[in-house]
Image 1 (cartoon, rainbow, N blue to C red):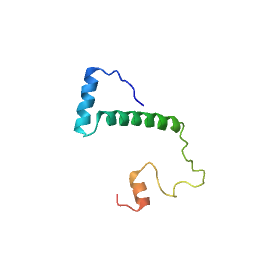
Image 2 (image 1 turned 60 degrees about the vertical axis):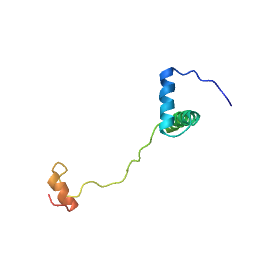
Image 3 (image 1 turned 180 degrees about the vertical axis):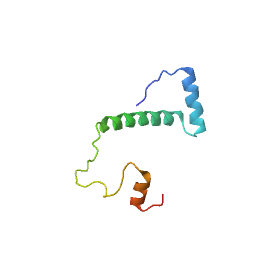
Image 4 (image 1 turned 135 degrees about the horizontal axis):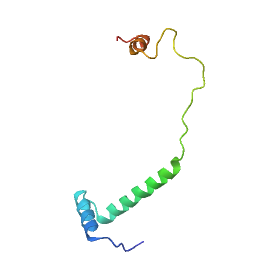
Length: 81
């Protein structure tokens, strides 16, 4: 399908320069740009709200580990402080 685009002079000049730099036609550059924008819109529409996994198990810190002291946490991991 053919269509006519009304682009300002600077936008057209920039697009032609980028197409030449990328060694592609202006038509291909415009098609790829439109495809990128349409894919981004479709991807953002699909996302919506993200559900994060929640651990509902029991447990807690190992006895004797002070969560307010880095040294205590590192020792529990077996690393040197």
